Length: 193
Image (tube, rainbow, N blue to C red; front, side, top):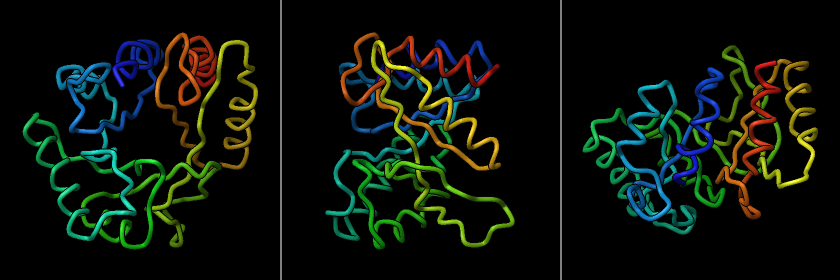
């Protein structure tokens, strides 16, 4: 979404917090979506720009051939925009299965689902499920306390774990799939404190 640039990047970049934006390549430049120029600016500032598919279809409903076409389409779009190929994917709708993970592993280094929680990993750990990384949704609304997220950050640090936080939009009135811009800024300030 365009709010990745207008709100999330605008707030995180001056704090030195790099973000990752997962883009749906067929929607780049559409209404309310990022443009390739915005994506390139974010990338140049140190943000990761990664894969959220070409079409945002449920990947676990596609054939193996359709999955390859989906992944190749994303790679073509990134290359055409002059960007390095994505290394990671956030599965649309959190939809993956064994075949999806097998095909994705031919194109990406990792895959993230939306199951919630903390992924326990280390470079020495050999049983990390790199194509089933867990993530925690940040859906804070106006008036919500950020303590659920800040407590999770503290727990992650205390246990020396990895925490992937995600949201779809960052705006004043984000709806159920996003985060209020003031709550997002509160979480960012907590991270840098």
